[in-house]
Image (cartoon, rainbow, N blue to C red; front, side):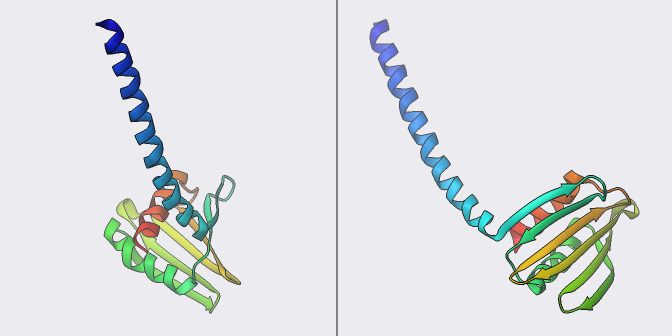
Length: 136
């Protein structure tokens, strides 16, 4: 009786692992599509900037930040457009938290810099970007 149950448990474990590995393939394919657009993302500890290099046009990114950050209780208070390739958006949030989003175009790529407050906040900057990016 124990022999049959151990074979059954092994077979069950193998089937579960095969199922999990199949879902991992589907998840990695969707992540690959996302990573094709996100070329580079890093956090600079000295400046407090979360920097993302994205394979998108500057106008679509600008409109995404303007449309979706108010959903997180951030209000656009200032917008500085230096030229067609550079733009700075300033938002204010809860507790008068300042969020500065700088956009700059380099050929087909757009460089995004997000800084929260004076010193920056890596986790919150990454959360804001992922919130906006998922809705683009």
